[in-house]
Amino acid sequence: QLNPALPPGGPNAVVPARAIVGIAATADGLGYWLVGGDGGIFAFGDAGYLGSEGGQNLASPIVGIAGF
Image 1 (cartoon, rainbow, N blue to C red):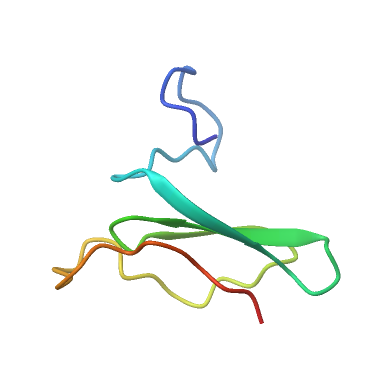
Image 2 (tube, rainbow, N blue to C red; image 1 turned 120 degrees about the vertical axis):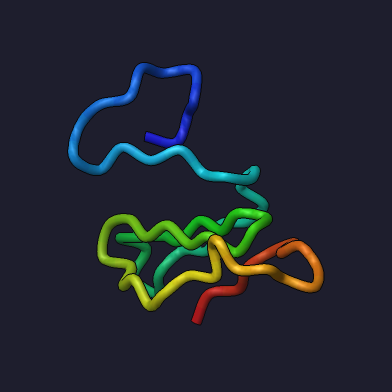
């Protein structure tokens, strides 16, 4: 769950450190990635998790995402 207004729960509950600034769908449309302004990546469905820059000191905030 990504809505901090909802009570936390479940093994996959997360609250991003920064606002979500982009979403990209997988090629088959069965998954998607969300990206936060701090570089945090969240994968859902069949989207593979390939790493994240969340928690790193970035020179500029992330402003979007593109699928592949």
